[in-house]
Image (cartoon, rainbow, N blue to C red; front, side, top):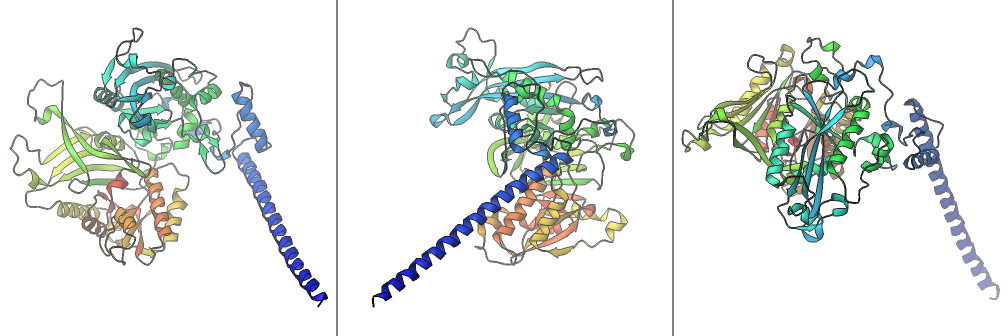
Length: 608
């Protein structure tokens, strides 16, 4: 009896000691794994840095120390990037075939833009436009790379916001109450309304002098275009905030840097040091000079998207073109105006002497939508799609678009007066001119009274498919059925890291084959697959931006675990001749059966 409590106490102490030692071993193993992972990360970065021609001998601490010294004003040391993948490319060799003529094309204009904002709404958290500045870079006339360009101010004005200003943000914007009310005697800028500024900026971004291709450079352009409520084609934007060699590597993600730090580091200039706030002209000019200094590496990083303009006046020998290769036949874009949220608006020509409001010869057209996509969110902003489609019809552009056809139901205009009724067929834009059929067109068509637009679109898709090559005629439209993991592999193996458009050899047709109306309702409603055996969704890589969106949709379907409810069919891209933009599920199913690609309006917003 005396020894029994001692025996029990010894057993309890042994159990506690065993548990403690096992926990200590687990903690030591976890620390060893973290140390090994960290050492592997450094080793892998060094190897990739050496492969890119960087300084592989530097450790991460030395790189960070070099970056800090760079910010302190040590201009003599070479900048070392943490991530070797985003490090600047090596200097261009003669084999690249690109020189300053690439940037001196008379059809291309390089503009820098910057906007100053004030706060509106509760506590001034919402931004509103208060000043807008646009500068123009004139490339040097000689072929000497050391020649500096000249920058001129095209547009600089103050803007009176529509809402009541609750925070002027004078420390950063330089805007004061007296400045916007016209009481500041030192002010030399005009004060205009927001609508006036928006129209003037849109006119400048559409065409500058004789240049019909406008490259817009800036820092955090997303914020500028958001307050302007405008949109510019993504392949014509050069953002110094999101250009990877200008960003900081945080390990798991990349972080944007301040414009003042970039300018001091790259150009040796000091900006944004005035006590009166920032100058939008100064910021726009600085961003434009940053792009010009890195223009060769930047355009190589993008895959030389402007090369097609250089080859426009040359021979049609595609093998001699740098970075331009048409792998697929031209396609036609059909917009179902009855089932997507767009509308046509007349814009009278102010220079026309004809007083008729509805004279087609003195009017231009706008294709308006009320929302725009910023990442995965929808923002209520008016977007004109005509300039966006015009930029996609450039010679040798990818994808090669033969026509953009906008279809509307003619029966809706049956009761309109004859002078107000739009024409049945009207060409809004002809990139090739009247004598050259090589350029694409933007056409508006009205269906006959009593004829459904769906039937017209399906008939045209069928004709486009049947009018292709003999090898395509013998090809069966249906493809093989694969799993969602194979879909993701197909989309990522071709498009991973690629910045070029239309490189994917296949596309995926997604159909719903089971489940009730309430099964994953939110997901299927977004993908327009609300009921089984109705509708279709195409995951394609017509542009690099659309490819990223397609990969995101595929991964979302993978996470939802709906493999028993959805089937995935792989088809060849080379057999596609038509693309239909519609939100109608029944029309989408009919178009896919005729060999065409069907995209929703949300996908259209991710193309350009």
